[in-house]
Amino acid sequence: MKEPITVAHLITKLELGGAQQNTLFTVEHLDRSRFRPILIAGEPGLLDREAAALSDVSFYQEPSLVRPINPLADLLALIKLTHLLTRLKPTIVHTHSSKAGILGRLAARLAGVPIILHSIHGFGFTPSHHPIAQRLLIALERLAARVTTGFISVSEANRRQGIELGLFSADRCSVIRSGIDRALFQTTRVDRSAKRLELGLDRARPVVGMIAPLKPQKAPLDFVRMAALVHATRPDAQFLLVGDGELRSAVEAEIVGLGLSGGVHLAGWRRDIPEIMRCLDLLVLTSRWEGLPRVYLEALASGVPVVGTGVDGAAEVVQDGVNGYLVEPGDVRRLAERVLSLLNRPEEAVRMGQAGRALSDEFDIHEMVRQQEREYERVLGRSAEWNRLRVVAGCGTQAGN
Image (cartoon, rainbow, N blue to C red; front, side):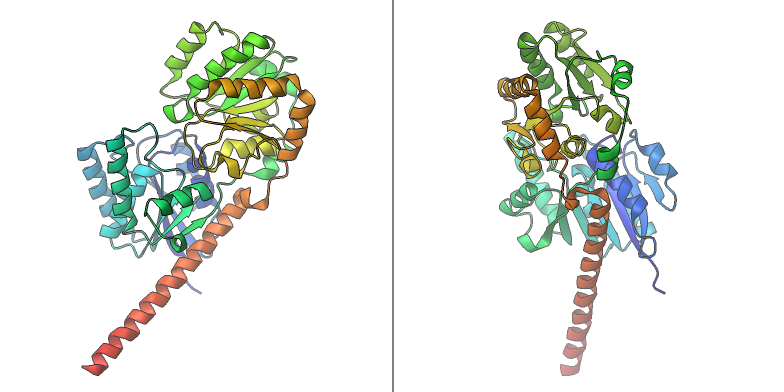
């Protein structure tokens, strides 16, 4: 019987985000008869305790691996990751997120790891960066791409972008969707009135919610500004913002400044998202960039229509006018108009919610893991064939000398 292949997943920070939760699910559910998972994370995050508690998963942390660009810390992280991977000797290193993606792939190459894969959950160079910073980050991605065996993208949009930027050719990148537990979100039942009271909401008034970390990528201030525009026409509407982060103080100040105290409820980090989804009439997401917004999948599986920004892979999930509406990032007025149209036509919101429940199998988290396993088998087969041909070519050269 063959020994399981060691696969090391490497991510910058285990916070409450889609990429992080999917990575935890992957290492927990990989077929142990074929793969032995290792998980490596950088700076401390909210999911560290869950990672350490996973059975049959070796968990390592390297605190020098942090999100902000810091040449000295980044060099130290590269050295330490190289040393760790040299000691662990994985056959496959699978990186996630931008910083871990660049430093992790370079460290894997220096450590002599045979197969290096990188998942694209959106790119690290974003519209928020200065053009010079964007060019630098793209150059670093191109450098890391040269030592990468293959890429996995969560959206066709990110795959196309990578090809256009010359990071990889079409045959070097597969699309494996960011998955959710569809059955959980489709079948969760909750006492809606009691849950709303628990969240500090009125039981009878419509609820517009957003579930996201309070960080620049998610543009939570746009959500508050949208809420102000909607509230001016529909003062009965109430707003729920689930998440926390660096922009919380700015969000609180904006709520007070726009006279929405008591109208926008900040719930902080929550683990009961399937139940919270059942309390929403609409889900809004104001992101400026994404790979594939996992919260869109969660809302649609729950029968909740989406009003959000059409960033990256969003249009591959939300069909405009069918199960939700998409607008341009930063267009707060258009967001408010779309929210009002559904609040004023609740029968249309119900129809869109029902349409959203028909998510295809490719968005199921169990299928996501199976597809990753098939991708591992594929690259392992290609690597074995390449090594065989190299040996044959070497023998032929020696015979001819």
